[in-house]
Amino acid sequence: MEKRDLLIIKYLSEGYKITEIREQLITYHSITISKSLIEKRLNKISKQYQAKTLFQLAVLLTKEKII
Image (cartoon, rainbow, N blue to C red):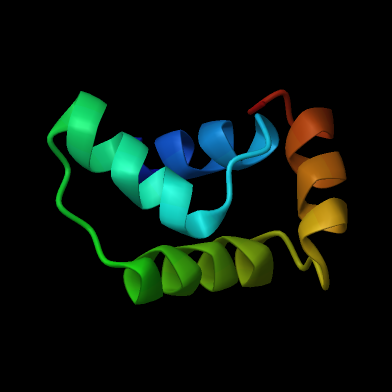
């Protein structure tokens, strides 16, 4: 998984919304990313782990010890 994907998941698990995640990535990590690209990355990760919801994705990533 790419660094930006891990950061997206980290901030999502901390309760940030997608627009807030975008601001965090730009401010603290110098990663320029759009809201739609964050949504696309989350969809790709969800498909990779066969999760239908973000809650299921969180559970699966916790079991894999990614978050």
